[in-house]
Length: 253
Image 1 (cartoon, helix red, strand yellow):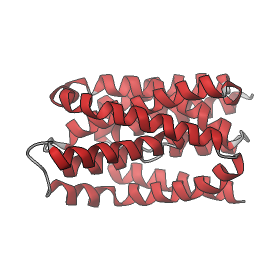
Image 2: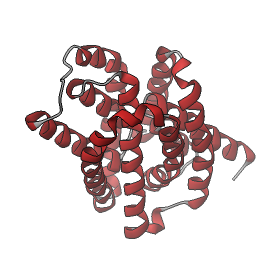
Image 3: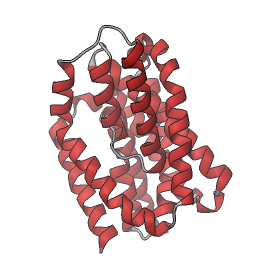
Image 4: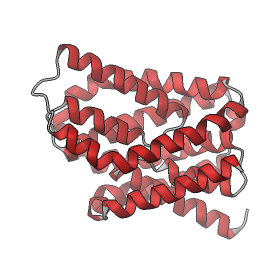
């Protein structure tokens, strides 16, 4: 592994950790980077998920004040994220690698659409706040978090956009508080999926990649929590779209 490759993966991890904390979709940075250096898609995805756990920890810690008002809600939602992550991770391991290679371009394309439309989704959602999370709203949110967890356990890109969109519709909290909750739920999904990968098929884990991504993501999560909200959203979205398109091209060629 060359010094350039090591540096590129660490920087991608840092970038992904920051983007995950602020926006969600950091996988669209690290995953294409790993593909660019020739790592097999499934192994790259699993190793990337493990490495990004470090960024999830620091990102959630950075948003601890915003998370505080939603602790009771998170207690209700966490089991759905946990179960969804297990299902998604097992699907990744059970389905053949050819299926992953066929599905991921579509998932990336969907994620890019969500990233681009994220501001419009959130603006629309902000006009439909609920005062209380009870009954049908709770059931709908639990199902949505479960599905997002499955998606996150399988691949993960734009899981944060899905979560914020759903919570914006069904919870009365401000966007920064919802972003903090998103970081916690995303951390649960990544950590749970990582445990599943380690138990079921540890041979797919490239520990060098895990360490490099984790090193970058750890500091990226801190950066994202502190200064990420000052970054122009349009620049983050544009960068994610460009990298995502590269990933689709790499997978399809």
